[in-house]
Image (cartoon, rainbow, N blue to C red; front, top):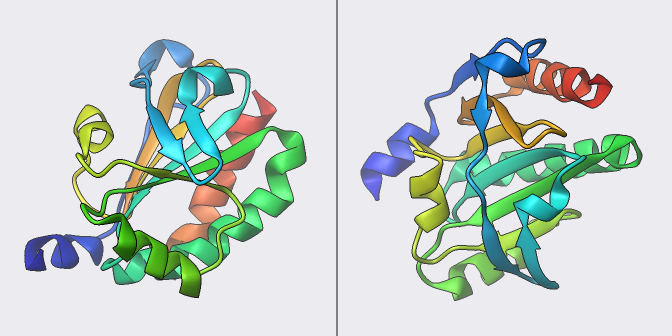
Length: 161
């Protein structure tokens, strides 16, 4: 766990060419339980999806939730869906986290971590931006204050497509 906590603090932003769908790949499908039922990424086709992987022990994850709440409120009407996938092996840890940190977006649970493997997650929080066409356009590891404008700009660009 110490290794992942260290990686949590490292942020890397990797953007593909947002203007050209030919340079990006199809986002791996995800179908997971949520607090309200289940989420299936294929059913979100036509929306821009901000897919975030998190865990209760991840300090930057705690800091990212208020920002994701803001993004959800600002861009939901334009077609943004935020899906935050919890990777704790014990759901009680996620539940305790959510008692302290508000989430006004979809929370999904993957105790086996299969979705993280499908996305080749390298650290947490790990974020992936999926366009309306279901293609993966950007990935980001970590969460730092200075990355917020870059992430928001990428969201805005995808919403315009």
